[in-house]
Length: 359
Image (cartoon, rainbow, N blue to C red; front, side):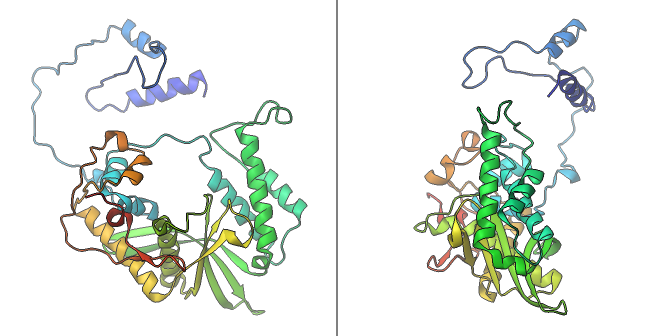
């Protein structure tokens, strides 16, 4: 970011004020070793003689607070809804109040890896690519916007180079382990918008479609790519999010595309071999349970029901745990959604707002 970019951002922020503008700052940040120097932009404002008196001008008429229509944040994607299913208060703090977590250094790694897999299927729709073809496509596709390549990638490789090598390894392992998938024609993230309860939920589905010689669809398989480590087999709760998303996609494929998906799976990009693909139940009762949970979450969000559902393990990894009192609270509704169907051997599990709650 250049000095000019900072100036533009500061100007844009200032000119968005409708009536009054308050500029605040902190000389000491958490974990900082020494106080920060005042911003040059602040010095320029001080030189203009701007008042530091925070009292409101005389004659201000106070009116009752009225919520704006555009402040009603409705869940419109699965990523919104899954926040609520873990902890409603966490959803409120992040989605309604805007307490966004810090951007991790490798933010976007999963997206760029997913794009590489997608383009492999686009460019090689009938036969698996060679190792060199995979390497060439990774080189042409890989991108991370928050970190930059090392100035000396050969002798001093940095996070960018390590992420690049990891993405290349993932792509090669995928092609090696699932070469038969390239005999199918893959839909390029088929978009969908479906009504669940009182909300319109949108997203994109990855489908592997088996077609006959006339182009007719013989079989469809929903697949979701995740750049995370395999959940612990002894912890069924870790499979809830993965299962719910595939089951939602199976439902959307049927509702929007008319494809009765009979199989679904999660591909864990960091795993190796056939263990990287885990089958997810998408039978009618499994999909029905997933949609019931999503509809339940939508209803609770629209009713403004945001209880705190703390649990030691869950709260330790929460992005907003420092500003949350973590006081156990109950939902205003007595309705409890059905348990989620997770992979074979894991059984059925209630969402974390119930199954991970220290009363």
